[in-house]
Image (tube, rainbow, N blue to C red; front, side):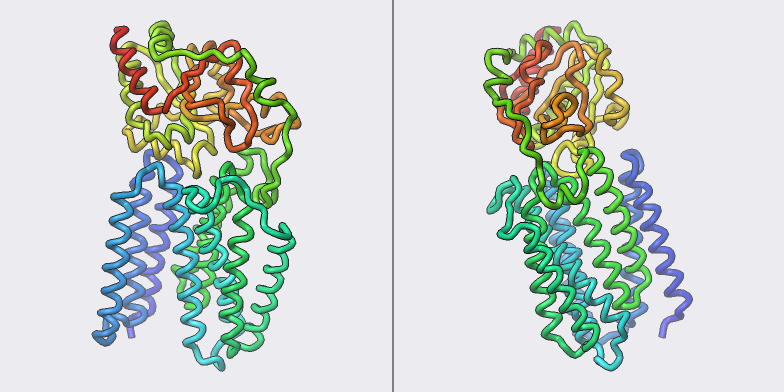
Length: 467
């Protein structure tokens, strides 16, 4: 038997690395180091677990099974890390959350079913039930979130299930009843299988009503769920590091969920039920009719020629067209001419928390240029040109002016206060909120109707020629 004190020390080291790693993820400058420390913590946890469970001295067939799992997992992880585009990272995060929840269901269930029912305490049974419910909801909810983001089978808009929230409440009640059966009678294996099945359906019904605009919240919440499922599994296995790591992920994910909700001026219950207000009665013709002014790359280049300060607002359209490198080239040209260029980052721009930060970091854009909404908003009145690339709802002034709007009260980037606004967009189609944007018809706004990557490339060319 390995020395218990050394095992506990190893788990303590792994937990400390997890905590320091998460702390590092709070700032772009330390994010890479934080990620590496977290990965190191996981390596330490794996090695210590192999020693703790005496797997290193197990029979050869156990080693072979472990080796196959390591090879399959490492190959899959490395392939995804190298192949998945940064624009698809929200989908990837949703899948990873789901895998975490699914693993918790399988591990906790296997440990529970493999234990002599006479030795199963109420604590272990309760933790198994919690892992099954939360893990199954996380797994299937994450698959729905993935598909909504990818838009393969499901649309990005909210999808209301028959019976609405009553259906989800009934499913939850049934799951709790099945859970009580398991706690009272650990030999009722049928109840565990039924519990996982009911919780799986629940995961689908609670995620379908969440629309694409709320996906940053959904991703953060599912991340929290995966951590809680892991923590519950830690109680089943009596594994301290799994309890600590799961609790850290669960707590940080929930805090991030609350931050995202505040950024959208929405309650968590409002997001989960897909309860979006009907909105104002203004039609696109009322808002845009005869007032939209289109422009060209050459005209925008002339605006840049007279500008001293330019702010770029990236949105999901920039991510879809993979224009992060094109925008970097444009920034380099403007700065070479003495223009001060900054990026205004809205907390929910894109499809997951920090999506724009990650996307721009991929193009080696300095973190110093990325300004959060509260920092950049007071400076728009002193900005010569704002270039909005693929953003819509996060720059819609209706959030300030129309109390009946679906986005009423949502904190936005006050780009309409700048001297000139140039919006790069393929068309006047609405954002996820499904409402027109008066910014597009404002007196100080020009519309550049093009794909973001093509538009930015042409802008760079025009700036070069104007030099």
